[in-house]
Length: 124
Image 1: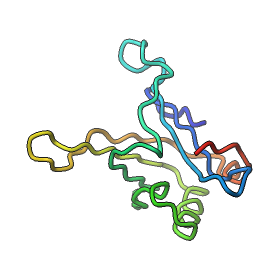
Image 2: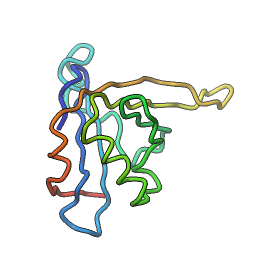
Image 3: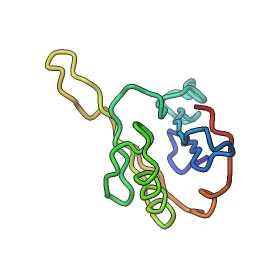
C-alpha cells in the first residue's frame, strides 16, 4: 500500500503467491479527498476499462497490467525498484468527440523497492 498521495491510496499486487494469478493494482480515495466522505471508495483498478498510462520517473510503460506480458512486466517492475515517482495518468473518452482526454494525473512517491518481491495474494 502506498499512501504518499494525500488524496489516494495505491495498492499493488506485483509478486503473486499463486503462479496462475496475475499482478494487479487498485487506487481508492483517501479520507482527505474532497469532503472526506470518499475514503475507501475505489477510483481505478487494473481491471478498469479506462485508458491508463503508468510512468516511472517520467518513462512510459503504457499499462503493463492490461494485456499482461511477462517480459514487459518485468521491465516495469525493475524500473519501479529504484524509481522516485510513479505517475498514473487516467484518460476518459470525451462524450462529444470520442477523443481521449486526460482526466487526471496522480503521482506517488516510491520507496522500499525490495517489497516488490514479497509474495501477496493477487485476486484477478
